[in-house]
Amino acid sequence: MTENTSIKNWAEDERPREKLMQKGPAALSDAELLGILISSGTKERSAIGLARDVLGLAGNNLRELGRLSVKEFCKIKGIGEARAITIAAALELGRRRQAAEGPERLVISRSKDALPIVQPLLQDLPHEAFCALYINTAGKLIRTEMISTGGLTATVADVRLILKSALLNNANKLIVAHNHPSGSKQPSNADIHLTKQLAEAAAIMDIKLLDHIIIAGHEYVSLADEGLF
Image (cartoon, rainbow, N blue to C red; front, side):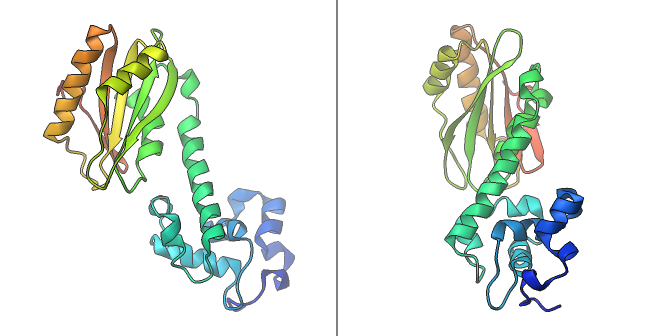
């Protein structure tokens, strides 16, 4: 079977959509699942062939695939803007599903409690972003908010906006997090200064800053655990 063979000509149990219906999505390879999103091929490549090309952009690593932009997907011949947007949207849904699993049941009091929420939101971003978790007296999550996004090396977090939002959400506790796209989890002097500034300002309003977490891919560092504020 050559790459330019239409999927319509494949045996029915080899077609990704039919295979998913018969055996469930877990039975499909990454390329087959991506091929369903791509929907149709070109004269030269089947949808599965295009999916393999897309996966190749990320070294066949799904985590790295999640870091790619619509523009980067469009580098593949046969992947136009519409298909690229479909892929990007599916990857974002996966991130949000991971972040949404069970936060309403969590009692958040330390970095390990917050990590399942903030890591999926931040770990794949190619730029810095800063988010906050607003928590009530019982330790339950009230709201997760993306505060700001920045460039490749820095983002700006406004202490006043964070605390204003905490007050509007009736939060008594707060955890903030941001990512380091460089992959280094080492907090900078600016990170430490901001954390101390936020903790002091929050205390005046009787809001406790529980932690500031830095995400670097699958690794992280907690400034509270390290005793840095």
